[in-house]
Length: 373
Image (cartoon, rainbow, N blue to C red; front, top):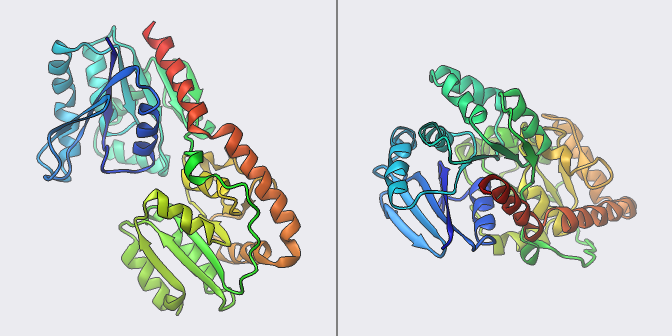
């Protein structure tokens, strides 16, 4: 009989972000386990309970934005009821978020059940800590870390945070990966087009600094265009900025783009840009690197785990549109193509060897085995 893992996560399929994609990729590579996903409902059209393969999804709440608080308040109680029928071998919290608070409450009442915390945070950590203090949940928030029996982090940046937050258990770095079958391309891409395409893929939120890309575009010649994949609360402001800087005819907002279309976008891009203000890791960078697209990023958070300046990508300072424009010009200049190709090839090799889900999921399985035995 399959061993059961209770997974507490604030959101899950079909509400997909970086952490949810990672969870899905790991689960489908661990068929020997039965996963019970305890999450917030958020949308009324989503069923309260749904089974897909070795996963049963339990969505709590009424289908509103407030369901994340329902998860916090009732998640542990629901899990206790679930455990009466099928006791879990492991409790797994995806991120130190609302689901993490529920997981901690469950762990407190089930001390003998091992508890794994996975950190996938990409937002500003100081802002997150401030938010928890303002909500009066700081002591509870810290218990997400202190009650864990093992913490798995997607970057060394987050591993340092876990220790700073009081984790005394083993802390392991296992990064997120990508599906090489979808994104990997080992063919040389000779970009001889007059029109140069800057491509970015991210949530349209402040921390991803799409505004800086638009400002940089305004400083570049007229043959440069910008294609933006993703949606979010900053979209209206970003569109207003394109009009203010008179570049609205050079910017295309694509909305949320499925994976198969994302590779097509990368395939026509001259350069991938995301000048993040904070970043836990950033799978979009890895996907671009695997596809053979030169990447421009900033030296923040977990980015430095995989992007070395002029080796596997190119770095620019945070909030510096001038430097970003200069770097885009440098990368797309035909005179610099030899160096750019060397960087692309090193980046592709790094992704193939170190960021392949088929290699990473077994590392998560090893953590499971260590905790359960």
